[in-house]
Image (cartoon, rainbow, N blue to C red; front, side, top):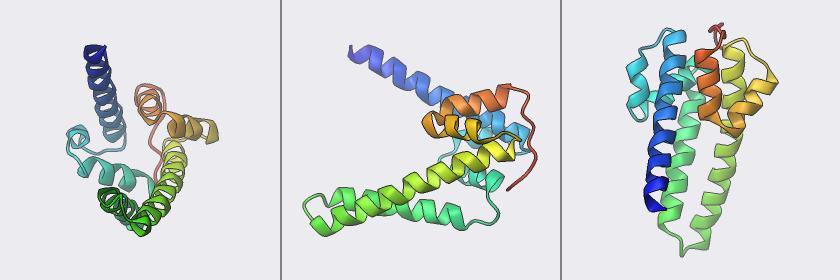
Length: 135
């Protein structure tokens, strides 16, 4: 059972890299950026958002969540973690919708990206979607 979970995790990670690689190439960014942590997230935000404020907000939320998770015995830190997690969910939703629009797709594709970003990225990358720019 443990071996099958490991294989599934590896496959899931490869799908994430392949999906981003394909999207980055369509958007005129180097595909290899998809394998560099933080750079891949920054590039995806750069593809969809105007300015870098959203990336900084997402980064702050991730740091706050990590810090709060480290202090699980503190109700105050757990409150911070809950707010940061909610903020990350909102940013993920907006990011998914913006990514779909950046490739000329609508709300249904954005919703697919919300539910399964890896599958959605692969569909956008392999399909006929063209990068139309930030929205």
